[in-house]
Image 1: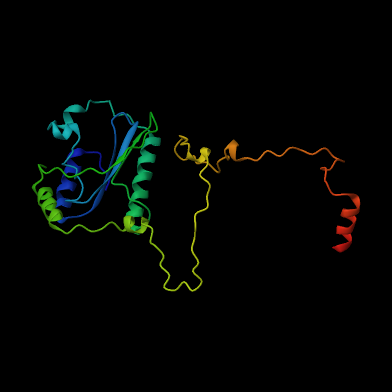
Image 2 (image 1 turned 90 degrees about the horizontal axis):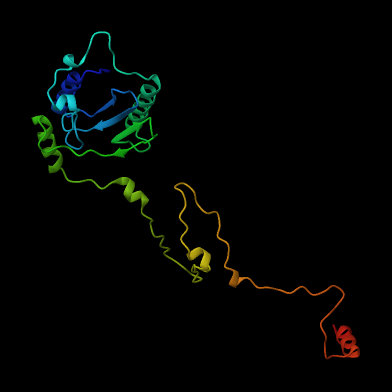
Length: 226
């Protein structure tokens, strides 16, 4: 359902809180240069009444703000971006893939995308929302599967007949110890070794050999014995 009327959203929010229905809410600002999408799970995240828009919180009649012949700003690009985020987030939730965003904002002026989770308001005006919060807090907390998958599991071999073990032989050079601050998303491919670890070899001029105390006869006998 698509509706830009705040009172209609409040009605939908009340119905979802009564039924415990998960739903998505989105919107675009009056100046049409920012918007947001939000996943609402009654009791677990903030509902629409927990943090309502200013016009709803103030109790102002929306009809008094409208003037004949004047409409709010509208940018199809902003509407399209927010709608795309809403559809993409809904598909991830229904098909159970990727990371579903609880709240994702969009600011077209600065290309800023704030991301957060809004906690429910314990003093929400919707009594059904408060009841859903109590039910959610009474449930045992489930361990996040993503956190468990991220933990490295230690590989234990039952048998090690030959006593094979892995030893870290990496050289901790001065360059690798130095912390280099890079832009987010940029990583170093490799680190140059320190200059004191490089061996300097002097070039021997061509056609010359090192002097030896052995005579030519001694060298000839060694060659024949090989």
